[in-house]
Image (cartoon, rainbow, N blue to C red):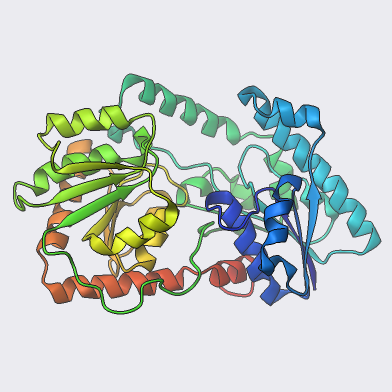
Length: 402
């Protein structure tokens, strides 16, 4: 079988969307005779330098828009149009190759969003799109403590999600698709009802299939928690700080490290100061990815109360290291984490105070549970990470696993 992957973002060791494109390409090789990956031309140098790109049966096609479009891409107002133009040009290139030597199937892998859609369904062969993100929203009750500018940003995002429902670009793609995959139940709601019968919920990200940390882990003597991610209002670090204040009423030695940087750092520092946590909350700054992964073994749990994250690579990295995770029942983290590897805090009909208390309860449980119980969660984290493998994701999207 000869398959084509449309992967605008495809780059090894980059994380995020580029990692999705790269891993899907590598793991599709086990399911097809030839895998052709259509991606941006500026990915060529990094891809060519990676030995895995030279595996038998794996081929790359590179396409980019003219210099004037690349220059305009730096302007935020043009980016949406830029991506549509790239999609159209990529389709024309794919159509030409398909006319010469036909492909058997085509997958739209990255960027898979509700607004821009995909033209690959026009090739006239079995077409699969996704997993698509874009429908995840922060519950209204959990926005009240955000700065005004952040609440306005969330309202604008809500409007964008509403507009996506009527996108003239995504509807033809949904109609042409043999299968549609979305990243969460929230994104499923954006798919018109007549196409939901061929739509499934599945994560867009995955692990390499085995735990990085081998051997039994031990919890630290004093409970130490960590949050990692960009310091944005919707990542939920403010809830983690407030939860720590409640935790320290029971466990006075508990601490929280915040790894990352971003525009809301000063807001978060003020919250820590307000609750008298300036010494207990360590704003550690931005870590290189491997340094962060290496540090995970020293923490009791990874705290990630994100409000609308469709993925969450840091959650997977924590699980791979055998670090239990505490998250909300929203977006990708709420799908990845279960009772075998951590705590999923329910948010339905809950206000901010209730969510903070539930986060604190989970942290207290982790910080006070017997060593054997914590180690059971640690082993469960590694097992869960192994279940959420790229091989499994690719097989499911390719209809080889149900």
